[in-house]
Amino acid sequence: MALSKLARVVLWMIGALLSFSVMAVSIRQLSALGLSIFEILAIRSIVALIVLFALLALRPELRVHARPRRMPLNFLRNGVHYVSQYMWALSLTMLPLAMVFALEFTMPVWTALLAVWLLGERLTPSRIGVVIFGLIGILVILRPGLASFNPAVFLVLVAAFGYAITMITTKKLTMTETTFGIIFWMAVIQLPLSLLGSDLTVFAGLQPAHILPALGVGISGLTSHYCLSNAFRAGDATVVVPMDFMRIPLIAVIGWALYGEQLDLFVLLGALIIVAGVLWNLRAETARARLLPP
Image 1 (cartoon, rainbow, N blue to C red):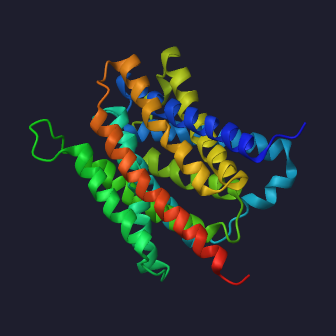
Image 2: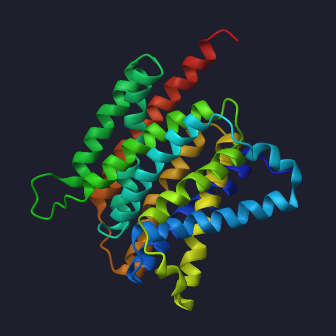
């Protein structure tokens, strides 16, 4: 019996939420075991490439998607994504998990602003709204002026800005390239970047304790992209984004259960304000698209 459209979205989003959570916990575990962020990201790319090359061997029809195409844009996309990923991963070792995930939701704010500049899109009232709601949400989360303010939050905000650039370049790539091809070249390009900053002798000394989080960071890096992409294909963004928001309370509970992090209501409230702005913009964009001639 075929699954309904909503059921498919829910299943893909469950996979995405679990993947993001596993990735965050795996990064923190590997860091606690003495690996640097460069080495953790190298492991992620190595595991991803093993899986991707296995798929290429088992499914020859995928090989056409791994051919080098639009490489300048691939290099730009993956270079910016790598820097953003490094900052995001580093922030996971310095801030509560829920705060990192909440501030990451400012990405649509930067995307709305960059789309005006880079793609020539119009700054509509709802796009202005997503920026204003995003700024208010950031202020609620950070509560500037408090003695507990951690400058590491700027790592997440810069990472979110970089992810916005990544989203725009990915949008351009998806006009001609498949998800498999984009992910394949992401792993190929980012592995040398990670190895440049890594101590290569570390990999020879990996212990059994490294295996599970190494597999977690590598596999979840692939499944998060795959599940989220399929969720957007299966349903409208106005359905997917509210479900994606659920990763904030989920990671808050995980942070509380595994690391004794406090459940901060201000983080959840700020994230809710940010997502409210995103949803307003999504609904306005959907309504505007329906009015355009086919």
